[in-house]
Image (cartoon, rainbow, N blue to C red; front, side):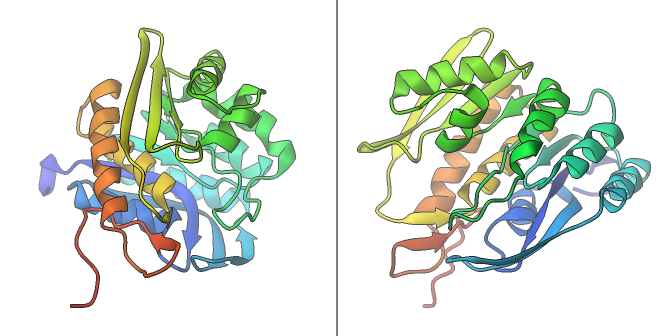
Amino acid sequence: MTGAQTITACSIAGSDSGGGAGIQADLKTFTALEVYGLTVVTAVTAQNTREVRGVWMLPADAVRTQIEAVVDGFSIGAWKTGMLGNTSNIRAVAEALPDGAVLVIDPVMVSTSGHRLLDGDAVTDLVEQLIPRADIVTPNLPEAEVLGRMRVATLDDMTEAGRRILDLGARAVVVKGGHLAGDAAVDIFIDRDGVVPLSGRRYPYSVHGSGCCFSAALAAYLARGMAARPAFAAAREFIDTAIREAAGGPGPLRIVNPGGTNLRRR
């Protein structure tokens, strides 16, 4: 990962002071996958695994200028968006993002603790300005309900919501099934060639930052030259390890652990 061979990916997202999600989780994921991580910070948050105590959005000019700076300095293999927060920042990203950019959109709307992270009136701009440019969109079930304009309560619902999001212009969609009841956690990949479900073990605890880690892994694999379907399978395996070896505990909420290094005190 040196010199002309450096593979880069850029995260456009908020900063998580607890280090478990957002920019921090993305950088850890990029590093674990041997991709050089760049960042565009959209917001500063004061949070831990239990709560978001404050959110301070950066002005759109700051977001736009960060994108312009990294574009001028690096050859970027893939981009991912996380917390964008408001209409102004979404429009700034849409304006500054290079044409033809490989793009993963994690449509972050609400934090794990229930704090709203995307203004309600910003969803229209996300749908109209960014999703049509996305290589992969990765909604969880509540986000799939908003974007697909339907209730999602079954695997068939997940597939239908994914198809509706695909119709918004994205090249592929991964509907994440972690919120769905059942013995297994099932994620469903949908593109214009069909549907690929992948199931994994459901762990008896919640994990802060898993959505950020998964979408960052997708971006990293795309930056490394993988096509969308094999990138989905690889990212699914990566996030399973990051959840299985999550940091923290005992307790019902842990922190995603990109790369799977055991962080428990020995």
